[in-house]
Length: 180
Image 1 (cartoon, rainbow, N blue to C red):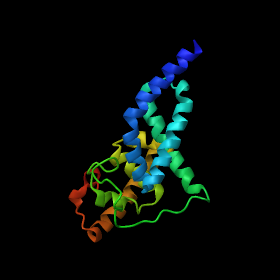
Image 2: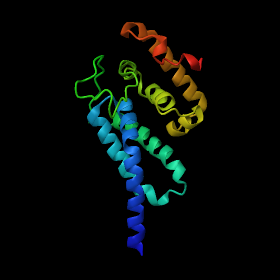
Image 3: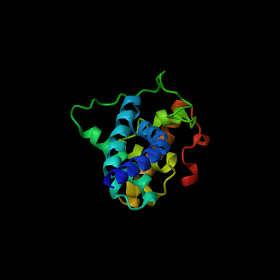
Image 4: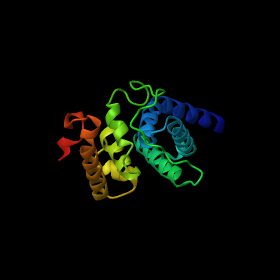
């Protein structure tokens, strides 16, 4: 009986993981700016979601729960002394499949520029504009107030706009003009 429940839980998790892993990987890449770091981040996130799978009452909330773990794990990776600092580059590495798992053709020049933002601003931008979460949903994932999301997003967009000309981007390249 318990084995049947475990098998059903494993099957449910496997279906969810197969469907959500590509999106989690893209989001993780946008948060970390690093191919291997993104894969490690998703692996840690999936492990934590799996361990808590039996506690999940609302299957609709699992995506938000996974996003929150992803962001928290990313923040934890930054805090670890053994974690090397990321190197920001204006060049996207050759190994990045620009229209595949990580980018889906959504403006690699812009997302390269997003990598220069401080981690909290980057997380706010990724969740608001890539994941298309509302301000309230973003605040919930980040564990902060809606006002903090608004200020972090506003600062990030101001930085991106000021750097856009230097990188050959225009306001039409999705720099959040419609949010003003």
